[in-house]
Image (cartoon, rainbow, N blue to C red; front, side, top):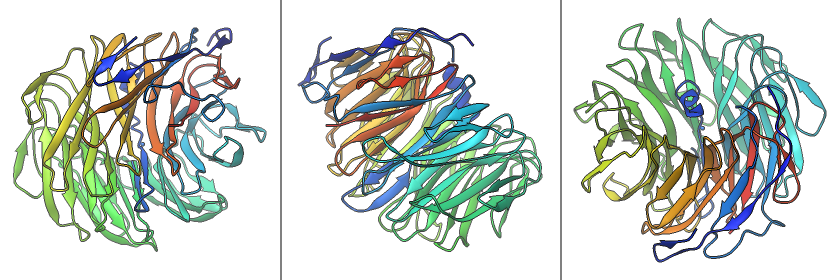
Length: 497
């Protein structure tokens, strides 16, 4: 691919006060969903939450009425000549950052060039709060292998995704049964492997999200077809051609606690998973036709409906909520607050009633943000909308209960609460924040003349927010970092209060 000339980043302040403002590529997500990580610094709960050349890449920022300090905010880009993407990000209680994703061909994270073993390999990289490299690992086989999810607690990092090849992680051989298999690997925070395993079936299985609680229990979700073994329990999809969602919980030793699958149509996918403070598991995703999650049959209004389901520590059904219109709707990520309320991000594509009346999508997709109480009752719902496709992918909640949300938008997008963002190119990354009451706190964008996307974000212990995804142009970051090298390149964007 052609590379664009390097261009300076623009830093522009937007004022958001009392509701006043001044001022795709996303189709791949359906095939390689990412996840997100939220660190609840108050409670210690950790939850996983998963281009072409361009120019004129800029950053618009609103920070409670002030300008971002470029000395403490930074952006980091890593890329080669092929497509590289950040899929998930997490932050530990010391402010260290962890990112996983995919890369092809050659890539240098700062410790020397690494070459993929096949078409697509997994990377896991850690930086300190200042952006200095701590450690990096890459692994893969001759086919496509993807790092799609990670989560962290006080002493453990867990990474999940899918592999299409037999591969080796630090001397541990992982087999491949054919097609896509789920992998889970746990590391200490210095990057030393503790254990790794795969879950395989006769067809395909993919993990799209992972969560870890303070005791080291792990939950995963994703989708599969055919028959798959999740570590002691085999699950079967509705038929061999359908995709069903799965959710599974493991104890701190890696032993299976329980596993469930749900599906009845062609497209049933688990997108995100999180722990609540009782050890229960919260699932989000989408389903088609009609599915019984435990509380009776839920019929979709259209192609797919967005759904959030709560299970207790033993996997027993507690409640579910679902929204949908005539199109494709999905709940991509869920995060849990210190009071066990939830924030959900996703996208919808037609007329949808979220509980406060029908909302009509302006474009092919609009992003939605919903806060629910611990029983699933809606507190508020907000949207980000433009005449073009807008996607909602990542959510995190900070220690004060403020929600941060990311994805991609096109054209000029209206942000509920008084914000407006205009993209520089086909799609830009957005970072939007609401307080617990649903008041807009900030609305920001990062993007250039081509396609850029925020896949995941995490809230750190000092109020910082980290966003990962990809950009499609070369440019200088806020403190002079050169971001982007060709094709799609990994981006890590740190924003401070």
